[in-house]
Image (cartoon, rainbow, N blue to C red; front, side, top):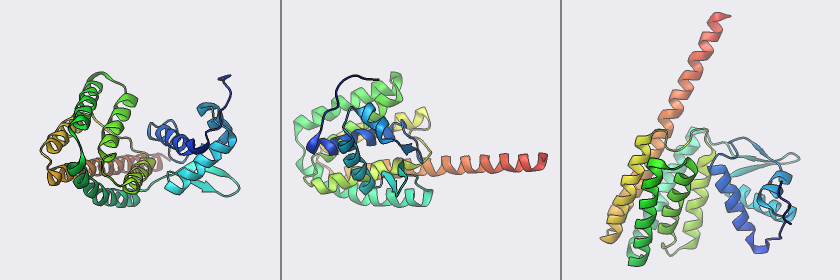
Length: 235
């Protein structure tokens, strides 16, 4: 346990909320898991006041759920809701992509190329945490240039909420390789200032993930049902 004093974060509670959301994305906290405030205080070296503020912020985003008289737990997202989130993300991220293509500069594109290279390296020799963090940094840098902070905030709230399924990202190495290829195609579209091409790539990126999640969930459900049937027959 760290002996460093906890620091009041003031307006940084939103940053603390982002750090907790990242831990949820990385499966440090699983869907449905209860979050103990005292554990979060120690893990993030934050005050009780700031942790409570961050949890309230995440509850508003629906990344977590507040249960009166019990506390907070990580949201669980069913497949119907997941599909609705993905469909909404397509609408919002397509609009953001069009704005980004018109606003982004050469220096930022160079930063994206560096992130894409680092992600490609992580695909072949990095950890899942490194892959996830680099992927988020890549997309975050894109949407930082959409010119609409409310749109950007809403996009990330939906992205974080979609992590409430029990199915993880990149269920195969090929899925990682595909993300790597798509990142490089997005950069090419930005260099050409082709907003339509970027929007189409982003939409495909989202819908491909949705199809993978839905397929994996169906397989898990069928396996569970089959095992249940086998147990029933044995008894």
